[in-house]
Length: 286
Length: 286
Image (cartoon, rainbow over all chains, first blue to last red; front, side, top):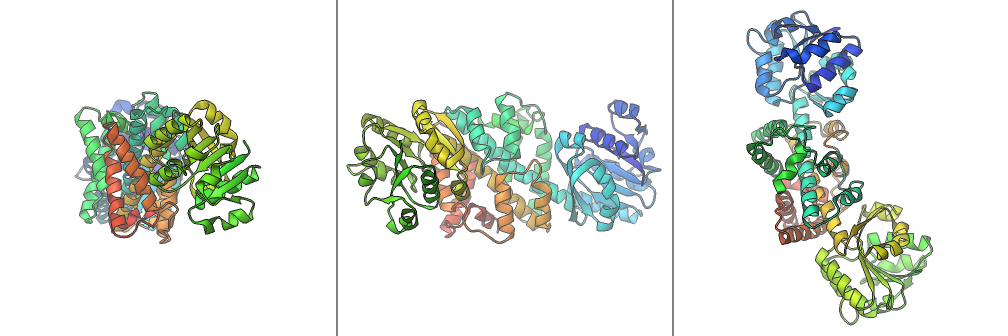
């Protein structure tokens, strides 16, 4: 279990690869845009030209790509992971993606003699860099146990959430809670501004109490500095909350606040703001 | 500045009076229901039969009652605080109430030779008991400075928010942020339950990251124990969020999430759940 194939070398992936190499793993990498792997390859990762080559001789394959369609593309088909990973290998999708897709990968992987886990993360670029990600894992418990040392190289709060897809479901719980929290924060700030409060003092006053939380501490200081740059992209949050909307509808659950917040973000995206950070929800109230 | 009149001896008021006495203040008390003051009187507070008598010889008058109409009742009229407090006294309303009412009290108090502050609190019964309330103060800065030792006897994070009414406006910011946060938490939990997650593990997984916050830590553990008892009553949260709705409409600001959450709580209140705690929002999703 020392040879890892890693597909998806974005901001998150790059830091995760560094932490895996630091822990002694040999990491082969593939990315759609090769140039993004230059630094990581100079640090010891092995470049592979295709997904197929990247997984062929590996004990474990990790993916963290963009959208569910990207996940489908790298897992399925004759050049995909499932057709080309060696029998007995573990395949771990760490993309925030569809729980149903995770369950489908699990089934297809099983048929091919592979072991599959869905393991999306929270903690952002900072968590990836510092190796303090929370990792939410679905699949078979014995496979989770077997891969735990790998997860421990990348994260801190690592939990087994149950069957295939449950890692993704748990991540969607996270995004649902964030949707409420960030909208409450932005509405509070919009209100404070409209009635003429000193917003820094307002923040100092309420952030330590019952209204306090990670979203408030992320968003208000940035907004007050005029910084709407992405810690987390609006376009990605829309992807995640759309998944949550679809999944909740599939179980006949109406999540009104989530849908309301998704509607606001879609409006901002339509106005060309999808590449801003989620704190740019404040723009909705202007 | 050692003689305080205190009107409103509920759960919050009682603890605040104890902390004032502990700090060496002489506290005269009045409450609509006298029996609720028995213990505090046995501990050294002075019972007064009317508002008028409770304020007549006091340096400072503190009120923490239920609704804005209760605030009006104790401040205005020939038997009220403004007509009966001695010239030069400070009158401090710590009820969560209307910013416009606070501004009106400030004006009327000024005409009567009194100094008025609005100083609602956050931190709940625990904060009141332990003297760790956050106190949000509006009014004249010199009056805030003069009363700071009194606030320090009851709280920790004490801030001057600006002119009369701004303490209330800041408290409404707090409640607006809470509305978003608690709804996100309850939707995440409802979703997790609907898709069959182990909810304790879900909570352990997401509460340490970007979705984490005081409302999540308040609500999920209680809900998982089946405890819907009030830390904070739904009926009081409806009062507060209604105030926020009115005030935001007055400045032409549309707070869609707040209104959505208020609508959910009103539905629960109509079903007879107004005396449950705010975490009972989870019942909306059943």
